[in-house]
Length: 340
Image (tube, rainbow, N blue to C red):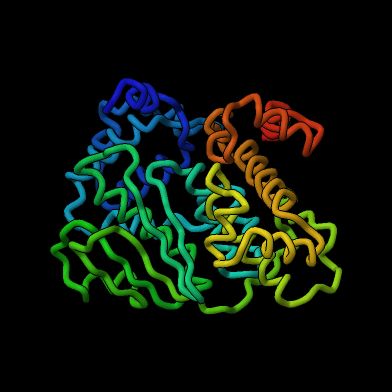
């Protein structure tokens, strides 16, 4: 790992609430707290601070301490299943208001890519089927199976309301039988020694219940929502939204989106214009919503948010955010902290 990554390991970017829940999970399995926290630098004061964050280095030390204490290879997946929507923070309550199942999954994936950056995720959809691939961007070595199972367990938990069957594929070996794994997830198949680690989910297609208490920053501020538009244009807008949400960074261009939809950029612009919007408007709306989410609900540095959302530097992100909201990212973060 190079010096830049070594430095990144020491930046507090992961909410301590995940460490709290993990330690509680291990204690419930009979493991003493001091045995898990030994030499991690994680203290009770830090765990009890609702605004605290831990570093990637501390997370890896914590998992390494626990990994050899977990005699059941399914334990990490089982812990992941405890990470339901509320466990992931404010977004957990907000996404219940998403009425489109694919959009719900896209929102969850995009949030976790920044809010829980232990692994990266790539989302692909084809028809009613979604694939989520996990990528080890930190080079965690022998802890990769543990982290992968945690993520897969949480994906199973938060996606169960829109999917009734899962196929989990892991790019490492497993010893437990299919029957033992299905005790945790009866609606699933588990495949080990696969080429990649991914989950394949056919969506149910049922709308998610609208929750009137959804957070205001996830309400799409479309000015043309009530306007009657041609069905083809409406479907294009929906697909473009999902593609932008799955990857709002620099690769998110009109040309790339058109290529993925197998239409020309000109046709894409025409469809969006027919729906009373534009690619720029949709992208900025989604980037604003995600930026506000990250600012209010995470301690991720501004430069990291800027990079994830496709800005070349923090200054460009700040300028754009001010033009969208009239406030700077720092203003939003300070307001959010003052309310806690």
